[in-house]
Image 1: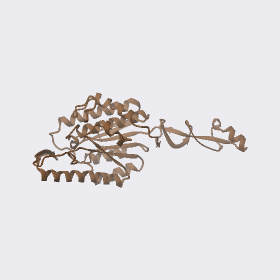
Image 2: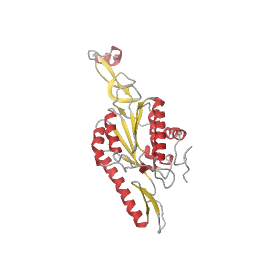
Image 3: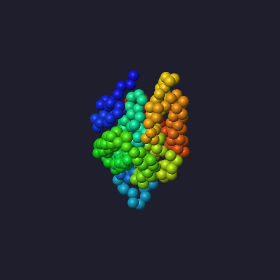
Image 4: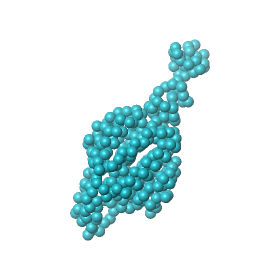
Length: 307
């Protein structure tokens, strides 16, 4: 049986709770990759120059640093050769986190929004471990919180504080108006403008606010950034929970409270499945793999999905 994560109650969020996800990030393996950003860091870039990792030897050219001459190869061939190295470059990591009201749903262990926060902070800690700069765009119906990429622990701390503040605001304003129904589209457009070439961008959402209009800005983003997507699910929304035949299920959808009987529940499940499928198809058209994370289990029990 799953137990709540450390400091968690499944509904609210605290900084201690998200700080504790550092232990989850430590359990993830290092994944070497090449970066194209222009600042020094811990990622090997495709640019050859002065650095720590040897790349190749070639003929000496005018303007090469004489300190990089390979004297052994020069002596063996009778022609001057120089060493080239793979420069280490820093890769900015940007997390687009969806905290729409649709994620404030949980039938088993956690609200989907809380699980999304756990996932975002874990990915953030992983970026810190790799020495990458970390930024974020936290999107919901009433605001977009932009966090510029920062290095070391400054990036993860601003992410944790931003998540907690936005989550608290969403909880306190759940009964208010629907707000901007195109907030995810605007977030994608904004992200396509602010993400630097070579960035790694993580999309975290339940797919409810994503539509075909998001394809254009995400395509523009994909041309110069690496994208990864996580889809938040819940056992009740996925039809995984056994329910009685005479079900009377209260749900809120698009700001309207309704009670579903068995037939109504099946229709609701079909709409939920269609939303998830549309998101997955959109990601597939971009060549982006979609990974599913359930709010019915701890993130620790699903770390294999992040590997």
